[in-house]
Every structure is written in C-alpha cells, then in structure tokens.
Amino acid sequence: MKMVLMSVSVRRLGIVACLLSLLAAAACTSTGSAGMPTRTPGQLRIVAAFYPLQFITQRVAGEHATVVNLTQPGAEPHDLELTPRQVASVTTANLVIYEKGFQPDVDEAVGQSENREVIDTTTVVSLRPLMTNGDDLGHGDDAGRDHSALDPHIWLDPTSVSRIAGAVEARLVIIDSDHAADYRRNARELEQELRGLDRSYRSGLAHCVRTEFITTHAAFGYLAQRYHLTQIAISGLSPDAEPSPARIAEVQRVAREYGLTPLEDQQLAGGMMMSLDILMIMFALCLFFWTAAADHDRRESEAEAQAAPRQPA
Image 1 (cartoon, rainbow, N blue to C red):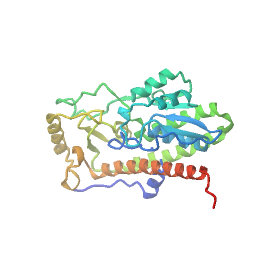
Image 2 (cartoon, rainbow, N blue to C red):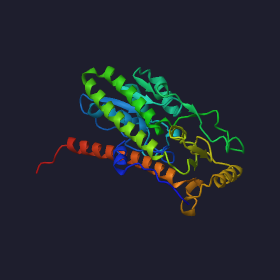
Image 3 (tube, helix red, strand yellow):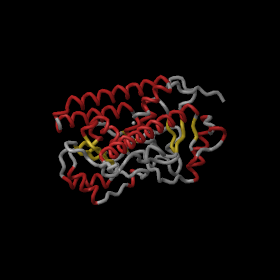
Image 4 (tube, rainbow, N blue to C red):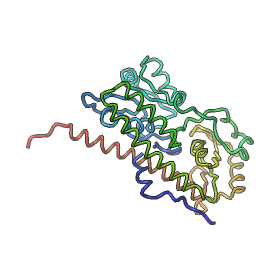
C-alpha cells in the first residue's frame, strides 16, 4: 500500500519537542510535576489545571514564577479530584489558569476561592462542537451521543495554544509589570515556535494519500479541523466510554470503506487504525509533549539540587 510520509523535518520536531500535553490516549493523560515545588522568594505562584496549561504558562512566565499542575502525573484529567491543599492553592495563587467545564472539581474550587486573577481558556478559545465524519457517524448505538457536546481538547491546535499564551502574557504584564519585558519576550519566542510547528504540519500534510484516521475516542477534533483531516471516533469525548459491539462493527465497515489498513496488518490497541501518515503525526505530538515534560522535570530537579544545603566536606 502506497503511503506518503509527512515531511516534517527532524530538526523542526526537535524544536517542537521542546513544546504543546499529551494527545488523546496521550492527550488525556497528564504529565509533569503536580507537587508543590519550592518557590524562590519574589516568584509568582501560578496554578494550572493540567499539563498543557502548565507548559504554556511556564514558558511565558519563565524564571519569574513557579507553575503548579493540579493534575497528578499519569492521572486522568477528566476525573480529577482535588485535595484540600490543592483547593487552598487555588485561593492563594497569584494566577489560576483552567478550562471551565473540563474538570468539575477545578470549576468548584475556582468559584469558591473568589480569586479574581483567573484565566478561563474558554474565554480565549471558544470550544467547538464535537467534529466527526458525517458519513460514518450519526448511525448506530454510540454514534452521535456526543454530537451536542463541546470538545475540550483545544491544546491540539497550535494556533489555539498561541492565543492562550497571549492571554497569559497579557495577564502577567498586569500582575507583575516589573518583568513585563521578559513576559513579552518569552511569549514571542513561544509564538514563533508554534508558528513553525503549524507551518510544518500544514506542509507535511499537504500530500497525504489518506486523511482519515480512526481513534478510540474523539479527542482530535481541533487537530483534524486545522489540518483538514477526518477523525472517525469509535466512542465519544470520554476516554472511559465503552463502545457497543454494533459501533465497533460499524467502524470496521468504515475502515474497510476508506481503506484504513492497520499498521503492519495488526489491529492497534483499542481498535485504533489509521494511515502511516497520520500515525506519524500522533507520534510527533506525543514526543513533543513528553520531551517538554521531561525537560521541565529535569530543570526543576536541578533547581532543587542547587537550593539544597551542601554537606560539609
């Protein structure tokens, strides 16, 4: 079967991999530190609801803030339950960034805190209804169940990430005007990297033989819409949703119709089938976020090591 691989350069992906949180099986699993790291005197303390928002905020804030991730590493962000300490951190933070409607516990904590320094990303990037392929969805037991639902996975579109970074920059300039120039510079650097990522994906996907992909749950709507791909989801927006046998059979029919042969004729975990072109995109985005998380944890460990008192020789 003839496939045209995306032409995103390794160098570009290296830059990218120092940036956007995990994609759907990956996009809906948090990474990065969720503890309460030591704050240097004079630093802002910022609370982010989950890793993509932590990543964006830390890139813009730089050395002037400690950004805490409320979602524990490896946890499912949809099912987040906050500890009393985390709830208190929302109240005392210099800034809170979250996505309203995505994590009910965070919504409640923000509402109870009366903290006015809050960024709700849905006011920056409007959520869209679930984007699906009309030819295959709309029939069967599970199809259409989430058609009226709003897709929360805005971080899978680099242009949306750029807009959120701009909102973080604008708020930090107000909160901490002494370091406004640094926040503006950091935001511009991130914006340039995101523009490069966007250009690479658009050019790399321009000549794909197939643009359809089948995924376990509908987490890739923004990615699909931005790059003119067709997402065919086995289940809806929730990663915990169990598709019915009828739905699985329907998706298998659609896979045959579109010629979506599983990689090496093996059915991937959870029934995921896609062209090698699209699989490469998913891998690149996962690599991007994994590398960003690892880099963040490494820098945090180095900072803690430097701050620790040295034992006398």
